[in-house]
Image 1 (tube, one colour):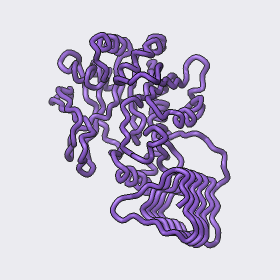
Image 2 (cartoon, one colour):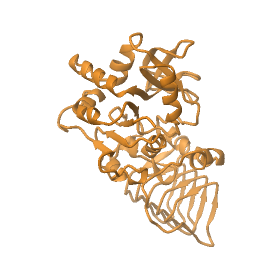
Image 3 (cartoon, rainbow, N blue to C red):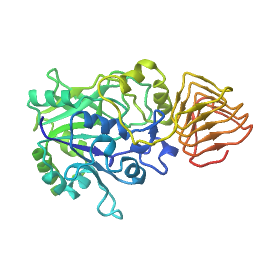
Image 4 (spheres, rainbow, N blue to C red):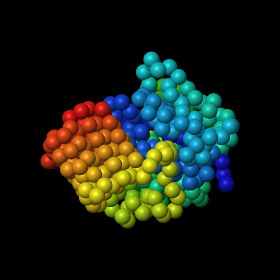
Length: 368
């Protein structure tokens, strides 16, 4: 097997989930009942037998450091290889771009025993077989391979995505930065495969020219100079760019086919292990079409909802179409509908909280 270095790039994250990213980076936002967004990227890299992974952070990275730890759950707790979390060298200096971060840690790339580098963001919910991506990258003789997916969501009002334009042979001939994609647009996933030595040279050249953005200054600027190949990802991947799409994407995991494709087909998705008792359901509980994590106590009614670890739904309480994060509590007679509670939220006895048009977030530790 070739030597592959994994890079998870959190430098370009945007605060698209508002209240959920006030105290954490986007990659560490909880998802699917017991996971964090970054778990999917970590597990994809594990599947390609990456033995060294660097996580380049920008800010609010305490939660991602706590979650990833030594990387043991992803078999990355090695003495000489393993997991490396690389925060800004000078936190007081304004970060000019991800290339600045890469350059500040250039020795990490130089010392890595790898010939190929995979660069990916930490917030994409998907299962990408990087073995197939690298196989195409090598067979096409590409200098850089850019992953893209055809857009299939609702119209996006804000220009958040980058759009790839390809010729008939699959080469990327242009990248439109910060666009609002339409149905079928080739959305750049900001995921790349590149030779390590070429990456080091491009990083150095860009910094010398005071260029700091990988997509703009390495990929887009070298279209026509380097062979930049596109790779179409056709698997399931929700486009998350708002609280509404985050809520919808979680609810998609109530579909047995989607759930099976992530957690039962091919490789597994791993996360930080927490040894808790199984969920406890009382005789008064009524649960339908929901995911209930371990450590929960369910005495009331739960419908079409995602319930994270350690949540308590007391007798007579009703939870519908909602996401309740770790150690939240819904007390007797309370009703919660179309709500996202961050961690350790308490809904007091008899309280009714509903949202009609868009899901509403209750901030961490709030007593409502």
